[in-house]
Amino acid sequence: MPTGDARRSVRRAVVTGGAGGIGLACARELSARGIHVVVADLDEQAARNAADEVGGEAWVVDLSDTAGLEGLSLEADILVNNAGVQRVGPIHEYQPEQWRLIHRLMLEAPFLLIRAALPGMYERRFGRIINISSAHGLRASAFKSAYVSAKHGLEGLSKVAALEGAEHGVTSNCINPGYVRTPLVEAQIADQARVHGIAESEVMEKIMLTDMAVKRLIEPEEVASLAGWLAGDDAGMATGASYAIDGGWTAQ
Image 1 (cartoon, rainbow, N blue to C red):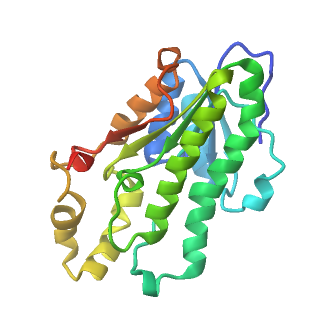
Image 2 (tube, rainbow, N blue to C red):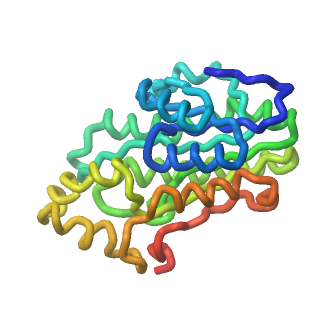
């Protein structure tokens, strides 16, 4: 893991899952704000391409290997916990290892990264923890037991980090998008059609957009713009919160 220089004048962000989708949009947004970005991703070539694009660094890492993160020291002023996967299926058919994978990647890894970053943030009296949660961190949907429970856990972790970090200048928040135009969402369509017994062409209207008042997918850049604000100095009093950007889904 790149460790950086404690004497630096430019703030440093680590974005997990930063080589694509919301993560890449966040990397671009933070870089545009003059922040040095470390793109953390499992895909080595994609991570290096993204890092080259934003003038940052690549950190090739398997965040589901949580044992390897336990001794980590992470030099970051801003931590964006974004990496995730999705598996769709009824509880009685859900594979236990797939359930554990989602929890390792989307709850245990964020805990370990926060744990690794906090000492430096506390020392510098500044830190921004931005957890890319989901509308599913606030609401449940059938056939997503692992994802929903991991995101609900991330919400709680984020709030505890906010309470502990407050006296040290560290904020912690969740961003809660609805369905975003990313490969992660597109990859769900076949599974959603199968478990709901509908055609793939019906998934967008009948499943993904049915609870959203604004009937379109969210763009990754819209999520990233909120992350950019939360990363800045003006967001010092924004902490312990969950920011829905879901087209009105959770207003119901």
